[in-house]
Length: 438
Image 1: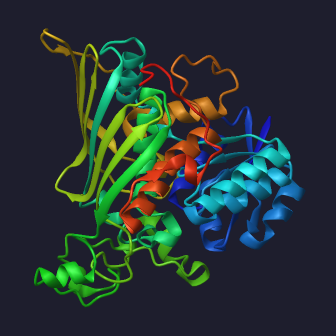
Image 2: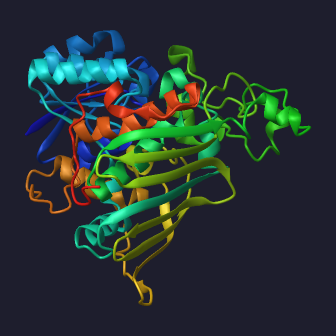
């Protein structure tokens, strides 16, 4: 029986709590949960058949010492990941962390130092690697379906349901999240790193806040006098409104917890402060010479992606239309975990040089994030799961670093208007000059 403890009990913790206490209960045991909000921890305990021991965030060391977990799962806000990762390792635990692994160079160095000092392991939950569509891209590239990849063109669109939510929550302040190029795009940069089997070498980026925020709304002649949505009569017909009192999960985890957490989850997306970008472009040169052109917008009418990988023998094209659902959903951990975005439409083709396009069949995923979440959880918690994954989907701290270093470098590039050499920022990232040798 493997013992787990969780720190951070917002909505993202739900899928881990459900997996440990239900799906993998025969081999896993949840021995403790830790959070600054007793209300949130009590909300989860009310959903469980056997309540779990709870600890205040100031009692993290006590939780580890008293419950003796084998592994700690970190689901706190991004800016505090490093402190819990390092302290858990110092107290003898392996760690699983939500993405992004961390948000800046100082915190990244602290994690690397902690691993070197303790010898403990760290896994980063890049669930998108497990989505059938994205796994198929990895498989096709590995099989040489387009020859040696040379150029990746990747555009991701967040819609005005999901994308707007980052501007209501703690993510909208860069000191908490690193901005969307760290918090959200860590998924996307990890996918590219994994697909082409290399690490970033040089990064140039441009971005700004064009749509959300008070100044942009006023420039369009729009005026919003309310600072939050819940309880505001004027927000009734606002399509951007997110009212916490209309959803049992949102109410239980956030509205009812405001008194002890101090966290307001439904701030106006056209209010202040917002200091992250909603429109971003990034150019990356990889260690093996491959180039990436990446864009992200957070106010699209539809959500999904367009991916093009062109190689020496052909081209791969992927179109995904994601349907966003409730970010939290109904009042149970199982439903919280299941309420993530689904893939409504997937089209994948390859085309050899001087040939016609070939439609590639993609298995339909079941579960959150296009079917990725259940497969990730099985990889994490099923002791019988094969460790011989030919697609190498399990992500290490090195993978976590390679992903956030694109976002960290992009943030620096946007501030200074220069190209950033990743090795100058973080020389500990290994060299991975495979395949093309360019």
